[in-house]
Length: 117
Ligand code: 5GP
Image (cartoon, rainbow, N blue to C red; front, side, top):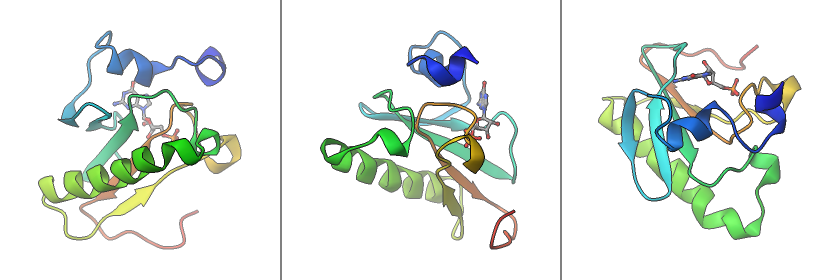
């Protein structure tokens, strides 16, 4: 669909404030908000303001940004009261990526099985 092809996605619309989101953190480089279909008591998505379509599209100029996203993921987990949590980045359709704007899932608040399905 067009969301997966264009540089613009529903997450881009959230970043521009065109559609609302349940925000939990923001700074100049990223935004974090609650997943609309939570898979656990806490399920937050951390996204860069830069419209990278996935981790596959990142390069060495993005190292600092990628590090920042992980640090924000840990910060959000702490803010949500989680000691234990999982971070996930799905890259590509077969891996389960449905929104083609890079996002880090932060999931926790219940026991999580490993490996995932
Ligand atoms: P992916 O499957 O691409 O790794 O993750 C995309 C995530 O975005 C899914 O967990 C899905 O529930 C979430 N999502 C899709 N559309 C929206 C939306 O409009 N608002 C919010 N908050 N989350 C969304």
